[in-house]
Image (cartoon, rainbow, N blue to C red):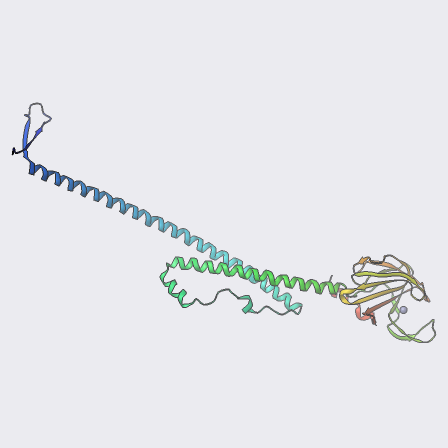
Length: 310
Ligand SMILES: [Zn+2]
C-alpha cells in the first residue's frame, strides 16, 4: 500500500525568501488535528464558564435590588399600619366614652382582639426558622394588615350599633316634655285645690300659667298633633302625642290654635295663643302632661334650659 505524505507549502511575506515545503506523515497530521480540537473545546468551555459567572453575578444583583424594594415596601406598610391602628384606637376610645355616657356595655378586649394577633404555632415557628428574615417580615406585615382590616370592620360594626342606640335615646328625649309651654306665672299648681268655678276642692290635672291674651304657646316636645278642638271645659285646646316617650301634652283655654290634626311638630314650635276659652276665669294656659293616661306634675317635666338636648 502506498504511504500517504502530506505536503504543506509555507509562503513567506518577503519576496526574496524561498518557498518552503514541509512534509508531514498521516499520524503527525491526525495528532495535530486532535490537539487543535482539544484547544478549541477548552476555549469554548472557558467562554461558557465566563458567561455563566456573569449571568450569576447579574442574578445576585437583581435579587439584591428586589430585596431592597421589598424591604422598602415592608417599612412603608409598617408605618401605614401603625398610623391606621392609631386612628382605629382613637375611634375605640371615642366609642368607649359614648358607651359610658349612655350607659351601654363596653366591648371587651377579648372581642376586640378576636382573630387579631396571637402566638405562633410550633409549625409556624419551625417554618419561620427556615425562611429568609425578609420573608418573615413580609409575612408579619401581611398578618398585621389582615388584623387591622378585621379590627376596622369590627369597629365599623360596633360604632353603627352605638349610633343606632344613641339615635333612639335622642329621639326618646326629643319627645319628652321638657320646656315651659309659655311665659307667665303659675296661678294654680298640680294636685288638689279649691276650684274657683266649681266652688269646692277638685284634683287639678295640670298647671295654670297666666299671662295676657295672644301670648304664644309652644309645643314642649317633638310629637304629632293628636287633636285640635273646642270643648266646653277646655275651650280651644290642642293635644300632642309623644309616642317615643309614651307622653301626651294638653294645652287648653287657648284664644286661637295654630296647628292642625296630624301635623308633626318640634319642641318649641308655636301651636296657639293663650286665651280664656271654655270654663275659665281669665287669660291663662292650662297645661297637662300625661304618661299613658295618667296625669303627672308638669313641673317635673320642665328642665333647666342648659339641660335640654336637641
Ligand atoms: Zn287648669
